[in-house]
Length: 68
Image (cartoon, rainbow, N blue to C red; front, side, top):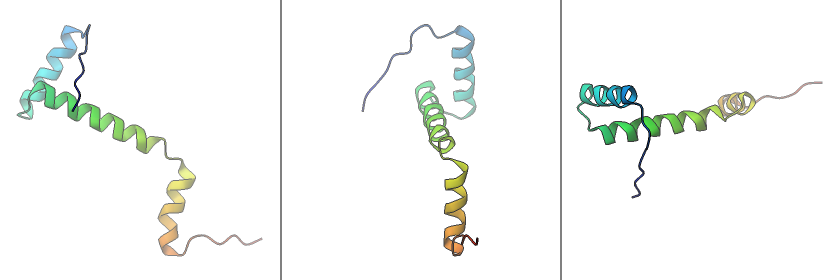
């Protein structure tokens, strides 16, 4: 596993991270990892376009058949 260092972190942001971690019984590092995981997973989901999401939902039902 790798590690990163985050420099120039605002004191208020660090305090928020500390409080959030404490509420969840996590270390600050674990909470930061969780935040990154969620943010990046959301980014991947957001890059999915609407047409692809609709197509995936209706394909198991027989897909769509275009009628001209």
